[in-house]
Amino acid sequence: MRAIRLVGQKTPVVMQEIDVPRLGREDVLVRVKAAGICHSDAHYRSGVTKTGPLPVTLGHEVAGIVEEVGADVARFKPGDRVAVHYLTSCGDCHHCSRGSEQFCGTAQMIGKHRDGGWADYISMPERSLFLLPPEISLEQGAVMMCSSSTSLHALKKARLRGGDTVAVFGVGGLGASALQLAMAMGALEVFAVDTNPVKLALAESFGAVPINASEGDPVREIRRRTGGRGVDVSVEVVGLPVTMRQAVQALAVQGRAAIAGLSDRTFEIASYTELLGAEAEVIGVADHLAQEMPQLLEFAVRGKLNLEKVITRRVPLDAVIVDGVLDELDRYGDHVRTVIIL
Image 1 (cartoon, rainbow, N blue to C red):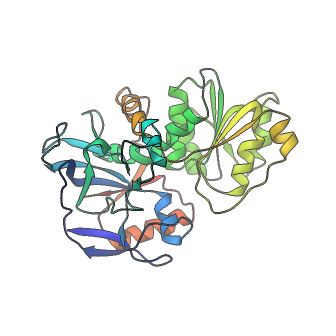
Image 2: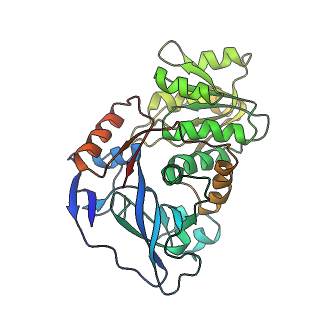
């Protein structure tokens, strides 16, 4: 089968012919129909985030059609439309038993530690798959498996409550989902912070208040619009020191900042004025949980989460084209989410 693979850091991805995965008794073979291109993939290519042994097939936002099932698979059959939760885990350890499978000692993320979905087929354990309701397209189902699910996990980690005010720093794939999900969860007002007018217009179309950080200090503008109070929850999905710090500085007293943007860089916090004195919280966000997927899918079915306008480009399974998309992500271009269509 065809597969777009990372063969080394700081080198272009390449197309290779590899074997179709073999099925274990509890595995499902999925014919990939849609696979998102995430900024994390650009980080893997650049070496900002380390992967497992190379080469590896990239792609962790995946949806498709069940092609074949293992002997012990009970919930799926050939022809089912499915979305792929990107983690495999043991299901039995301390972390798995507490519903935090991302910390399982044997956990593997597709497209990072094991072959992912930029390929004709992918094999996954049955428990990592979710049936896609007919209301959700395969394209949207694929994107939901990282950008939307990680955004939902961030908002849950930040303990978003009805009536809270929220600021989302970065209106890319994650940010566009985060602002919609914040509204669906009862946020009173959502501010969208970015420097790209195209992305700010998208955020405004979803009902968020756009704040252009290239025109002034976004923290000052958020405080002006909240009567000096700040926001109850901030979600940072860019991964730059400046936006991570702004996410903390924009908080109200006892506010919670969820940091989800990948970065290999540090940022500073004024320990008393920005943290201790306000009893503020800075919360790390690692991946997302399988147990959150049913609620996420229900938000989409009910129209609370719509990724139609978030998917701004569709490309074929072509290594040269996909490598160009990764270059654009490194430049923080206009496109929000690009999806590979097979």
